[in-house]
Image 1 (cartoon, rainbow, N blue to C red):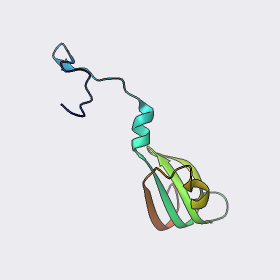
Image 2: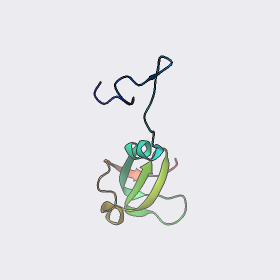
Image 3: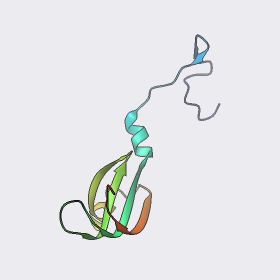
Length: 88
């Protein structure tokens, strides 16, 4: 089976499929994305024009301007909103 998470052709133990090595890091990276906003309103501090947050899994990893984070996170999918209040 192409793309199967199971190891080997007959990877069975007591009739149950056996999974290969699992990396929690890989799973989080699949669920990572950026949200860019015309105006980002953080919980503390001043509003950020042209703001951006990086989300990994269900946590905010980084906050800054789109320009600051663009190079580091260029490989992630990006979404755009007018106003963003993280955590709301």
